[in-house]
Length: 381
Image (cartoon, rainbow, N blue to C red; front, side, top):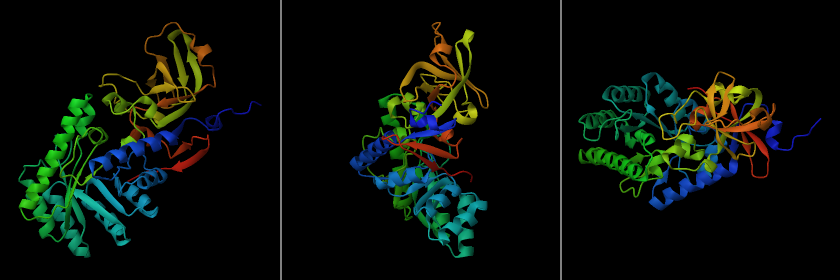
């Protein structure tokens, strides 16, 4: 029996692999940038949903975390992380779960962008004797949720929370449209638009004698592109911890900085088409094809060797539930059967780290010395 010569050969496939050295370098890069800009970093841990990853971010200097589900909040609080922002508009039916976390000692902040939800939060809080800390979501780019900085609704929501006995903690925004950009100039302009809009919202609340201590902005592209952040108190960025091919196309990372990959095995060929069949389909990679509308389309992911070296031109061009189709963008008559024999182990870099990570119950963390450790991740809402 042939003994494994690489630690990843001991794993079943498909498997989610975290390159710990790359991850730590990414964490250090973002933390150093925020330190230089003079703002706190509250990483959005929805990318990893993993306690050891969040703990590494906090150890590097992050202050608190951002989550996208209350299940994440529960997991991280149980791991000893108490300063948590739940950065999704609060639905009334989730208020009991938020209350339970706060009653256990979690410093949980919640978010809203409308008067109806603000009134519901205040009524529920008064009924249960709880003064929720609530942040108002600001729309600085027309991408998704939030109140525009100059809208009258901003003061209405602020007043409903403040007069209703809640703690108006601040304002927050996320320039999601930065994902559509790919030049340093455009990214810097979006970062300034994000900053200026959120700061303006805070100024309007304060001018109306409403408290607004926190001004929270951030996405990975804008965090890495902002020239300065006057008026901002903290930045929330998430995908930087792993990066992905969408971020590479945007221009904020190199492919050798991507810390998440999917380990896969060659299980077949269609030699006449130049296809290599692997056991990582969309159930492993996700259906996210976010690079399709960018300057370079990576299909369902970029292929690498077992050691993580790029296989130029080879991408996952198709994916069924458990089958992936690997092929060169411009086949040159190469014998794919000879180059990628049955049983060959490969790694696939994902388009969207958050979506790919969500396909797996755990990561296999690969240390620089070759050691492997299983890291569980949160699941559910």
